[in-house]
Image (cartoon, rainbow, N blue to C red; front, side, top):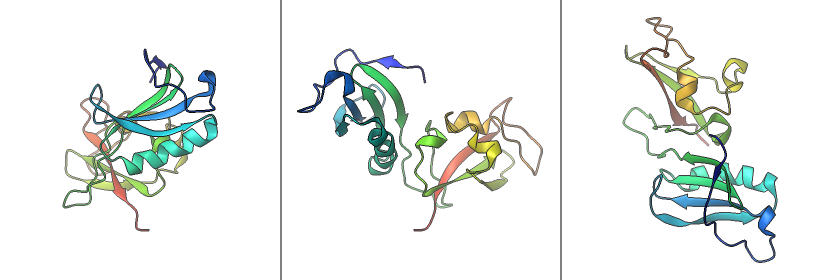
Length: 162
């Protein structure tokens, strides 16, 4: 996502300069109601790790990481609620924003499903891209279809046991 601009950001937390004002804002949906602030800090390393924690803490919410007026990234967190087969809808989250306790599973239109190793170099090199864009690069081992023409393959999540 290209860097955006927040016209009226929240004021910096007490003791923080406006230029080093990292925040994670929580909304119910893109363009929806503001629910609150998940984090305010002046340390960029903290906000990147906290974004992964916010994905788990606020399932289904729209999360925006900002630095002052600038949007660094915005994602819709996975719902966290599996269907009867254990499939969790991934949404538009990128692999790098996904906590470690989620695994990837690919599902083709031919009903074939397969686990995908998120640490495989062929997959992890796309870690900054949303999961639907990564799915477009996969092909089904059963029927041979690739995800490119009609998005025949989709990537979902499953929760690893703790």
